[in-house]
Amino acid sequence: MEEVLFESERTESRETIAAHLRAIADKLEGGEAITLSDGGDSVTLDVPERPVFEVKAERETGSGAPELSVEFELEWREGEGEGRGESGGLSVE
Image (cartoon, rainbow, N blue to C red):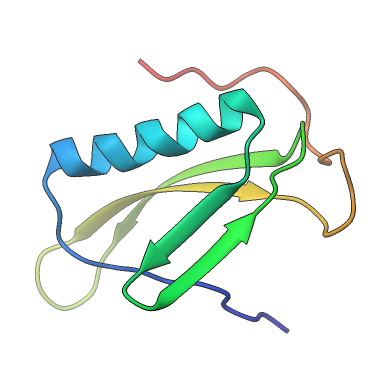
């Protein structure tokens, strides 16, 4: 069963998206909790030292033009300090 704690989706400029990702990266690097908020909704997450990091690029086809997406996901079990994934391998260029 999945419980959505927070969700926000809107069209933004690349610069604004980069600023959001940079703010998250700064919090991760500093070991600080990440608070996500949009209007009256918010959630604060304490990301452990080594969460699982998933990057996925997709092409969704169907009616109309294909839709491309890239997803970044951090995953960990509540109460656990270490992720299950292997380190190394991913490169972003």
